[in-house]
Image (tube, rainbow, N blue to C red; front, side, top):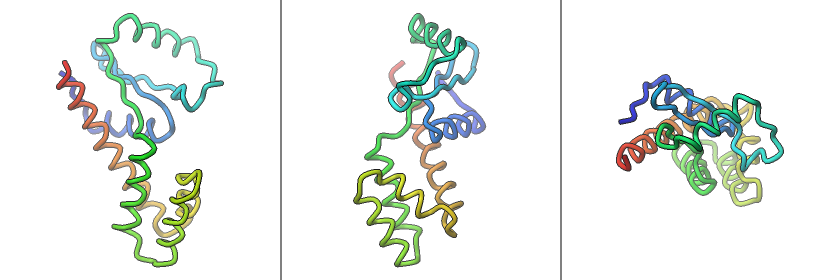
Length: 144
């Protein structure tokens, strides 16, 4: 049964938010992370990363994979943040407008950077990712 400490959950959340994919090695109770190949298809793996991927391929049952939220899920989290937390009408309208355009996440984050809500957003999305990781742990344990 997979069980993570709050510190491990925070580390995985931080790495997922940076665009990495994480693997928890069950026998060594160790977290490995590397760029998600969907986002960094030109990224050259280090020798250590290649070794980890080989191990995962050879013993998939010894690893739990943690992936980032789907874009639609992140989009909903951004919309919920605007609905629940943004009190300034003009900023709320700009954020909703950003969410309706291509590269919505980039525009959303750009508008929040330097605003009074930047730290609150960081805490909010990190909390949502920690919940997502716990859901993945539950799913992993259920499928065992």
